[in-house]
Image (cartoon, rainbow, N blue to C red; front, side, top):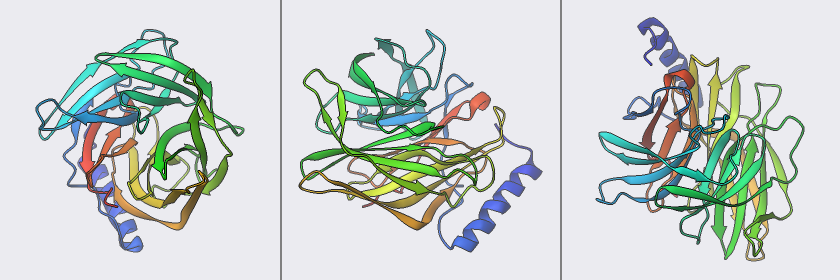
Length: 309
């Protein structure tokens, strides 16, 4: 995983210089990354908080893997503690997705989740023990030409649910498109989407042709939108990432969803050598659980204090 020292130092100098210009953020050097995967089939493409660990010393999260072949792992449970992580694959019961990229717990429905593929198919899951059962699945609404999705977030405010997702974008010529809509469920379990709004978004870091402007989304209790962005030069890297404060979402008492994106997103941290594809604000905490999918180099998780309301 380690880059040669000269290259590693050059990445850190670039990150430090940019943050000096922005006047905010950290270089991410203090993250205690813990390895959870060894190859391209075991990185972390998305995370959803499941609950505290049984012994109370850590947290459990569900992690999706972006595998595409039948029989490959789709979902794992990570128990994250200081100094060690336990990883256990879950059994997928139902139609197999191709290229899972994000997962989110459904507020107010314990044990139920939405998972999203890169092409925009949403799977509703019920997780019990070591099995995830597909309840239903449906395409996202308003899929644009060339959209490639890596992110999903659910918001509960004023007795209503809303869902956010984004086309990741590609380089300077294609910003991300952040979508938002009210969310309800049919009696048989299918997710139902209300009126969709769209906002264009450009990451402040990384820059260049390989940037994915939004590689994941999480929302704090007060409605702050926390995004990750990533640059990928190939299956062996080099990679680069950032986490940013991108704006705010509100859901009115009438269920209307409003998204306001920052003209100049605040970079909270940068992560040379890592490709962050998962950001999950932990309930009742200021911490975000971060996950990486570093392709042939595997995957890592760590925490950063980015989610204070």
